[in-house]
Image 1 (cartoon, rainbow, N blue to C red):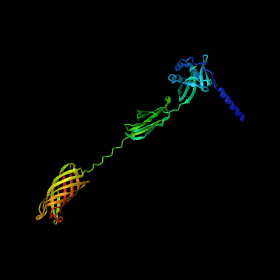
Image 2 (cartoon, helix red, strand yellow):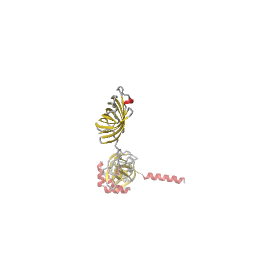
Image 3 (tube, rainbow, N blue to C red):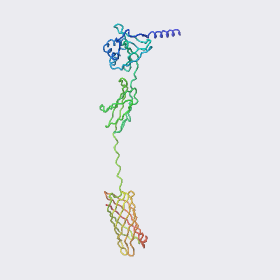
Image 4 (cartoon, rainbow, N blue to C red):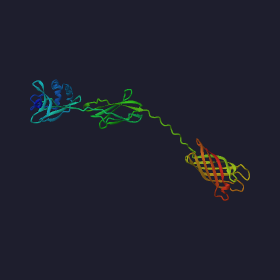
Amino acid sequence: MKKVIFLLLIFCFIFTVSAEEKVTQLGRHPFYKSRDLQPADLKVIALEKAGEVKQGFEEAGNGDLVFAFLEQIQKADVQTMELNPGDTLHWMLFKKGRKVQVKKDVVWAGKKPITVYHFEIFREGNLYEFIVPKICGNISLKNVNEVPAPVCVLNVEPAEAVLGTPFQVDMCGSENAVKSTAKVIDAAGTVLKTIELTPENCTAELILDQVGEYTIEAYVEGRYAMKSTNPCELTIKVLEPPPPPPPPPPAKKYGTVKPLAFLIEGGPGLLKGTYTGMFWARAGLLANLVKDTLDAVFTLGGGVPIKGAPWKSFFMGNALLNLHAGPAFVAGGLGFSTKERELRKGGIDLVGELGINLFRSNDSTGSLFGELRAPVITEDRSFEHHHKLLLGFRYVF
């Protein structure tokens, strides 16, 4: 059994070696006669010898390649190179007499390199590398290489977005790309936008101005105008923006909005000295120093005791600073009072108020407050017998 296998290996080796066609000399059987073959002559060969070229390609087993060859050679990038001893060719066309013939599995076995023209022809995903020796014009297929097909990879983030939010179109994952194209299509099938990308700039921002569902169809173009064939399509949605939140309720305002306003105030009160009841009223001015925060209040008026003698009507006035804390306020300052009873004295009062704003309508406010008036500075006016307690309603306008 081992002897059989050994003999088979020897036979295959001999067959392989004998299958190679060694060529040691060129120019004896030229496909195109020219003493000085130039790159432009290759186009002439394709035009004048198209029938013979087709015959040779078919005999070589590449008849399906001949039309691509005849078309592309007109624009091929022809370069000059050396064919070195030992270099191999798939096949070589030549003419013996008037007959086109083909040598396959050719090995250049000459002693020196020879000058050849080199160019490439692309067909159906394969790149065919041709050489034409300058000395004879024999068209020869040197190599066949598969060109990697382009593969399209499309990502769009986010998949859904509120109107006005940008989408990010990303084709950076595509393979073997020379350029990429993404088309934005609406529900009616209309192409709204076409986005062109390259491997160096493979992302783009997309903003759509209508609510709805859109399809993004993409493809990648590779070398030799090869286009990707794998599915490359996504659907995105543009959503209605949420309704705006309701406006916050207007902040409550507690002070006057005018820099200077009039006011009237009045109400019941108590006069110390067995706490006798009274009614009082004042009028004055309110100067707004800090909006909704601080006012200066100046008032002048009088009071009338409920009881008669020795009680008597009197005058009083205030100069206060009024500080707001929300609807509540506190005021303090100095005032004066004339005597409210026979055998008493009038004088300076220390005034404090504590109150709350009840309402504000346009430029007017209404407040309820309590007031304590305590005698200060003036002699013979003790707190025990000369303080006053007032309850009042104030209207600022």
